[in-house]
Amino acid sequence: MINASKKPLKKPLEKKQTNMKKQFIDDIKPGDTLKDLFALAGKNVLKKKDGNAYLDVMLSDRTGSLKGVVWDNVDQISAAVALKDIVLVHAVVSEYRGNLQAVVKDMEPATGHEIDPGDFVPKTDKDIGAMWARLQKMVSTIQTDHFRKLLEAFFADEAFVTGFTTAPAAKKMHHAYIGGLLEHTLSMALLIEKTGKHYGGIDGDLLLTGAVLHDIGKIEEFQWSSFIDYSDKGRLLNHIVIGCGMIDEKIKEIKDFPEQAALVLKHLIVSHHGSRAFGSPEPPKTLEAVLLNAIDDMDAKMNGIREFIMGQDSGESWTPYHRLLERHFYIGK
Image 1 (tube, helix red, strand yellow):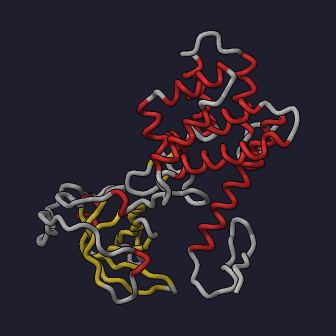
Image 2: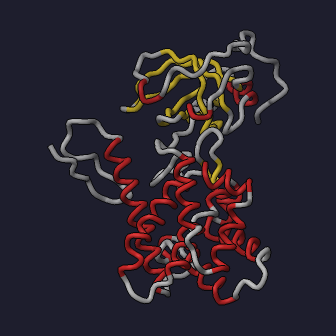
Image 3: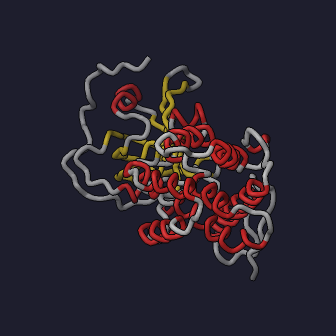
């Protein structure tokens, strides 16, 4: 058991520094000495073969993650830091089984240090204000009164707007960065604008409303203060259930919102993953739902594949194997 009452280390890390982060994980090499800030993305007390405890940690910043181990002063260091903290780390980097590993000598909360959240969580390279303004303009063209009023109710909610314009769209696969949810939503809206009129019998206002609201539950499904991870609510409910609840709450604010309209709109939310195997309680059963699922899948895959390709070494014709999509991707010569 961890004893939080033990005396502090004899040589505590400096607490008065205000230097901003300088060392990023994607630049770290074996033999480097670390004295910098990282997000504590993982923390587990384990046992060595001799029965003594050691601390297994995962350090992260906007460029990636780095496995670390603490061999000495395990109880004190473990008691001093909590998961999701920004921590000041003293460590030496080595190579273990082909991967980098930080042997941590000291670690404590980064109290008194200047912290820029952008150092720890990646952010969209697009202008968030411009994307938000463009989406608002598209929503203003909706002719169906109850759908437009529903979206206006969400857009008038300051807390919602803050979350919607900063949340990531995923933890890893696609748009996994600050502003990713807004970027993904706007991209889908623009694709709907181009393709929605191609097919007859499509309710364009319903489809656009569904696109804007399909992932809003991710505002509460994720936390992204120091690294992207699932919240307790996200793990227990998931964004589809959360999103339907958010829509129900806003519909209550709108007088005489048609029951059938609410039903078909929420069907878009529950079916946008396409099948039960991919997390949707029901598969798409309307034309709008089928089209929304196709556009969502296309936009997510294109972003995820592009990010995967951009993360590889230049000069190679093929990417490494993508485990989730089960293929290599050809980059070209």
